Length: 462
Image 1 (tube, rainbow, N blue to C red):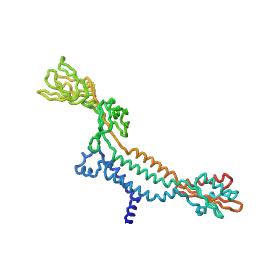
Image 2: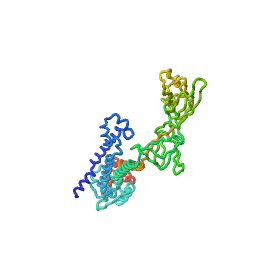
Image 3: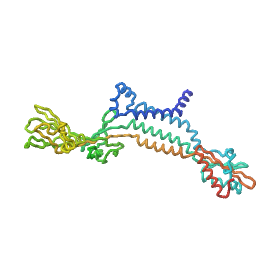
């Protein structure tokens, strides 16, 4: 049983397992970039065979980051990091808490001349002075007295042994945030007509509806166009209402979302709804003219009651040519559909012969009737992308820990400095040396600084 336990522990504490998992997760992330995910799948699957689509769906490759096997990879990585940390923690903690005993005389052997100092001061006076300098620079100092020598060791940067564990902890926190986001977060979409409100969103995964605990009202929607008719800017003025109180008002534009109770609302799309209104001028000859207010689905009799007209569609910017209404004319002899543009004169000036070559754009197609779009009063709806990810604050915290861990690992080093003081004929010799777990150049500079501090009172190096 013990051997089996040791085998399992060795497996999960293996650095090879860590590297393997990271490679698989990286490859999975590449797949998630190459293969369209979630709502982007529909157009992609049209290019694949039904069998291939079935295989990809069974492997959950259309929603990799919410798949069971991707969650398992993250879980295994978390277990691996925990076991690796637990396996190596006792030694690192001992190095962090402890301070080495000043008994490594061999460190002070065969030193270069620049690390040997001769002083005219008395043996014990020099020892006290050196101890003060060492405590000033290192804080943690131990001393060992023998018959012929006094040894000191100064130590700092023990926290560098814990930097890797801070990195491990930060990765675990980030993984926890990701998993919480996957399990409890959602992406959704909602459409709100101008002046109306809703408390329901449609989830992108599964197409189900989810009820929020507050209501969102679109107070106003506005859109601006470039000269060529393409949208320049569209903006939604939203109110967030809860328990009958208007708690927040926010303007939502593309790349400028609003946030309420941790849920972010992005401007994604817009359109017009059938409740918009238009004024249509219907004429028959010179005398029979009348203006009719219509909406999508409106039916009315033609002058003389020779047939019926029905409004099929209303577009604010049809084919980038401005407001237009699609009309169906039904009579005993014909059934015709055509578009009526508000700016038909300007359109035909830019496109000579338009009415002749494209009859469906001719408002006088049904003689002797002529139709004109006098005014267009569209009612817009705003399309909002809704995102809720409760793991974001956790991921942000983990990222901060990660930065702190990298700072400790790369910018802190555990350094030990040994100083040996021996008495010679009429002089006192001071030997200085050191060790570090990284950044040897930094240790050399630190030893030079220490020697300069010691030399300030009159001692000189060889």
